[in-house]
Amino acid sequence: MRKRGILIVVSGFSGAGKGTLMKELLSKYEETYALSVSATTRSPREGEREGREYFFKTKDEFEKMIAKEELIEYARYVENYYGTPKAYVEKMLDSGKDVILEIEIQGALKVKKKFPDTLLLFVTPPSIAELKKRLVGRGTETMEMIESRMKRAAQEAEGMELYDYLIVNDDLKACVEEMHAIIQGEHLRSSRNSEFIQEIKEELRKI
Amino acid sequence: MRKRGILIVVSGFSGAGKGTLMKELLSKYEETYALSVSATTRSPREGEREGREYFFKTKDEFEKMIAKEELIEYARYVENYYGTPKAYVEKMLDSGKDVILEIEIQGALKVKKKFPDTLLLFVTPPSIAELKKRLVGRGTETMEMIESRMKRAAQEAEGMELYDYLIVNDDLKACVEEMHAIIQGEHLRSSRNSEFIQEIKEELRKI
Image 1 (cartoon, each protein chain N blue to C red):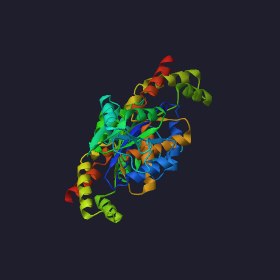
Image 2: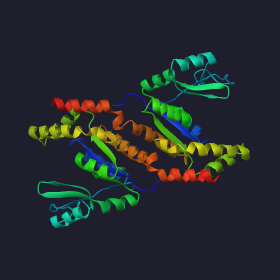
Image 3: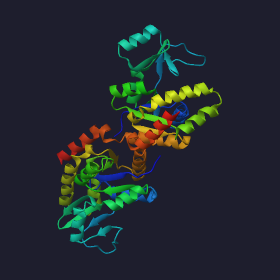
Image 4: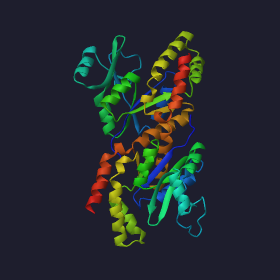
């Protein structure tokens, strides 16, 4: 029954543990998932490799990609462009992999509008008290940085109900399994299997 | 986050292995699921126990239940009534159990209309050829009986896309896990967690 992969957008509060979660999911189920690789105009940092961390583009190349609609979504931060190349995502989806895109809410909603089949997942800690505890616990952030993250979280929270599922990151291992179960369950949605339903109906008409 | 159970309606072609699937699911995850017990006006058969196979009612009692809207859905077959008592289902849902209702499509759609949160699952074999093979393989049915089941299947198939998920019963054990994953994943739908989202938003407003 299953053929094509599902496009998944993961967003969530900074400090919710998205990064670790993705890493665990991709290493545990590496045959099932692929992480989308973004294109950017910023310069490669040490250790970054073309096509692994990013596809590195000149500003000119990037703007041509925009013009040719070769990007699923893009945004500009400070002086640089960041975007998701369509070709790479399509190739992975066609090979049957579920492709994960880690972007924030504005990007997520753009993707969903263009590709209504996209699955939107929102990673959240069990409570805001817990989120604050984790940020303070890192010991690397000033109170000002934490407060700015909290303000950002308040903005992001406004769109939480637009996501399909909430991933409550309490226990990492349990959370990886939950996320895997949600995505694999989604493959069985009737709306994702119209072709199979048509086949069954046609078989029954022939009897 | 999780509090209340989900009401699940399971339908599917006769011969698709629904019964065995339910039995396996309920025995493997007995803490998680409860099977809804129907009320009926037919007489108990040998070995059937009140409140286990059915709640046995007189015609008069049953019609009073209808009048008082104490049934989620009901239907009349031949001379007898069959229906789903609301009180029992609500009690199980409140205790946190996911409650499974095994009924056919007309009933399923009535339940969904009354309780839009209901999860509709449709059990199907991987193909109609496979369904026919299974029915023939039983060796207990005449060709006429098989043909009548096939006609019935053709009617039921017309509503397949109205179900939320398809459970393709190919391998029993895998199928039990798929069904479990789908239902547990559903608990994490944003639309089922408005209260949690509100709590998060309020916590963030206070900061």
